[in-house]
Each structure stands twice: as C-alpha cells, then as structure tokens.
Length: 79
Length: 151
Image (cartoon, rainbow over all chains, first blue to last red; front, side, top):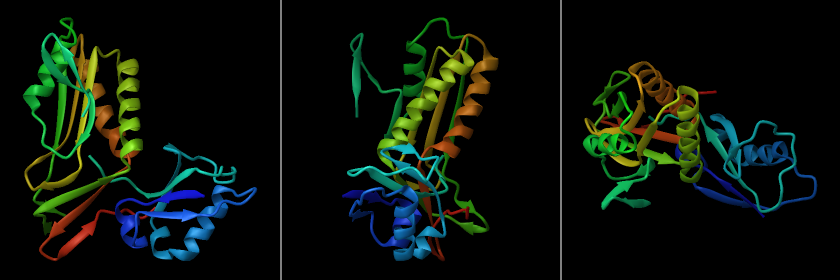
C-alpha cells in the first residue's frame, strides 16, 4: 500500500486528505501521478511538487517503494 | 512542544510550528541567551493583512504538511547559520486560524555584526516561502478561498 496525502487547496479539490493506493511491481512516481490525475483532474491542475517520505522528489521516473508516503502539493503560500 | 530546561528557564525549541501566538520578546530573549558575542539581531514578523487582492480579509487559515514543514524549517535554520556564520537563529510559524492583524511567522537571526544578521533574516523568509509546505486560505465577505498560484 502507498499512502497518498493531500493538503490545503489540493485536499479541498480531492475531497479528502488521504488515499491508499495498491502498490505494484515496477511502479514509478509518474505511474502513481497518472493514476491519481485521472481520479482527481481538478486537483492535479494545481499540483506542482511531489514529496516522497518527506523529501521533495526531483525525478518522477524513479520507482516508488511499497509503504511510501507520497504527497502531491500545490505551490506553497506560507509565510 | 519540545522544551528544554536551561539555567532554570524553559527555552522553547528554535524551530516551531504551532497554533498559538508567539511572543517577540520571549523569542529574542531566547536568541540572545545563546551567545554574548551577538552584536546584531535582525527579526522579521509576518502578519495577517485585512486586505488582499482587492478584497477585505477577516482571517486566514493555514494548513501544513507538518513533518516536512518542520524538517525544512530546521534545514533552513542550519543552512542560514552556516551560510551567514550566525551565532543562532529562530523560526516560528503558526498554523490554524489567524485573525487579521495577528502574527503569522517570526524569523530571528543573530550574528556578531549587523550585516550577516540582516542578510540571513531576509534570506530565511524568502526561502521559507519557497520551500516550506504550508498553504493559506483567506476568508472574505465573498467566501473563503485558498491562495493558489497555478504552476
């Protein structure tokens, strides 16, 4: 299982803060993103960063490990 | 919130995300307590404006990816200390509901001289806005809306 989290404006557009996704062999971050984007197209209009286990992911082509925590985030507006 | 006992006084952690308001006096006192070599302290306090993009704003609410936000703020503090040779630095950000006019964020940078303290303070707030996963929602008479910039 992969734990996918959403915060702020993305969470509002998805309608929830957390979704569990089945992991499959060879799954990349890009695969996961595509899968989520189909389900929540409005939310993904504003997604511009991805974090994996608390670190910003630079390469979406990398495989995502089972039990990972993945967060799809919009541009930050703190401060 | 993590606190450590120093000489009988409870000093709050140098990097914090919290719902409650913070005291500028308490933060600067804590910063000064770290070194007597500090010749310059620069601080930045960000407050909630009652007006934004042509609308009046009654309050703002903040959501954060807490664990990453705190880790990024700790990294920012360490980077600033190394980059500007600071003696100490503190960063506090509120989450939850903040009413118009209230404090949101606090940065303090202490160095031997004013120039690195001022530069580090400016660098820290700019980097915080870019790197720390926190989002704000504004409450206006027309309704509430997340502040979103499209990618």
